[in-house]
Image (cartoon, rainbow, N blue to C red; front, side, top):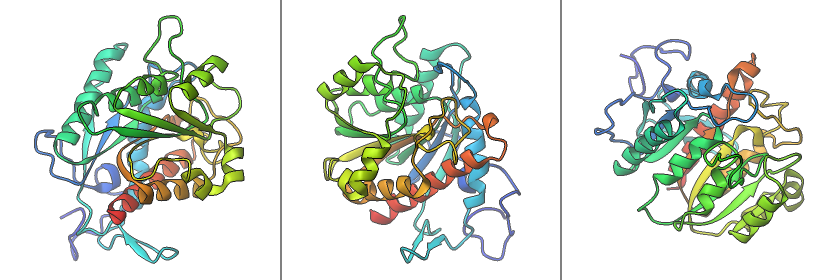
Length: 317
């Protein structure tokens, strides 16, 4: 027998078996989700303005995540002296991918939204692997009718364009679309730097519509605790991670890399602090485009961030 919880069964090394996320069970019947966490792929990249390829992000992150399929004993972190993701406490399933209809943004987005709504209806935490950052739009749409959420974004780009040549649902628009929702109470946009997809008026609109914007240099001056102090405490956080928020020296596999980004522990400590400060109720990680990184490092970073964040969310609960 393969998988978690079978001591004395198969060794089931990371390169053996099917590439579900973390080698957790697949649950392709979306009406039978019984889990604390459900992972959905959103392999959509028609929203890109430069290099495409993030449609292969979910597949690459799943494969990388097998490295962290910790076996039967969970993941012991000696710095924290905590076993994260112990088998008996981590009910995690991979529900596969939303169906993508090539060239049809609205149908593809609707299919992503449907998947997230099914996860929420099952009482599970949705973890969505993109895909370009436009997939955040249907993810946030799925929270309509839920309790209010506060958005925390890790990204090089503000993604606050209202409309450009009629385009409202590309990967430069998601934070603007989120800020328009009456159930989104505010945004923290962290890591924003260099040439952005959003012009000055977009930054002014973002601040007017309830956003707090920090660059990586400002983040480092404040420190993690200083940044967390700017995030409203005790709220329901929806976290959206664009992998280009991290430096291209560790995350080259993305469509719009931007130098001067975060290093791994900066991101992990921010995510750990958020999991302590409030309740993370949804998370997407987007813009992994594996063809630009033949080492696989970017996908491994993405998988490592997701596994560690899920572990901390469940631990602090």
